[in-house]
Figure 1 (spheres, rainbow, N blue to C red):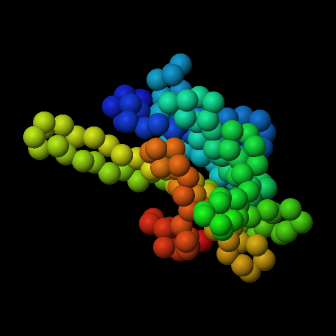
Figure 2: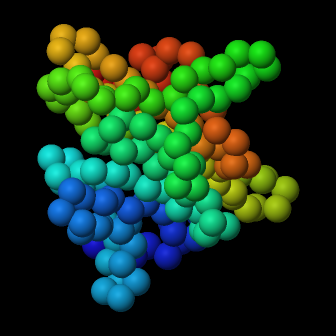
Length: 166
């Protein structure tokens, strides 16, 4: 599909799917003027899914589908601190039998129309994570990247919008 320049101008994070064989699929291929969507990702071969900030190219956040771990700017991102609580992020797959896994990624878009100016603005949050079956247990680990750069979690991933169980 041809790159939609309006949509691209609104998003702040662009994705890259990295596969086990070393190949990559980028959301936007500027050389061929081609835009890829989530359905183009071969999840059977997927190793890591990376979101890169268009605002500040030093900032990346990723989830590794082989390890069950998240990374922030290339560094392991194990927990969020909320007041005096530490909340674990990710679920290490090491020494566990993973039966089935899938990437979770979508954007939540809110459009605000200013009636006085006749303009519309988009506010986009990015949901990133995975769902896996380990033995007979279903595991979900999901984070939300907000427009202001903060990262949040869902108290209960089952309540997060758009989820369909495996």
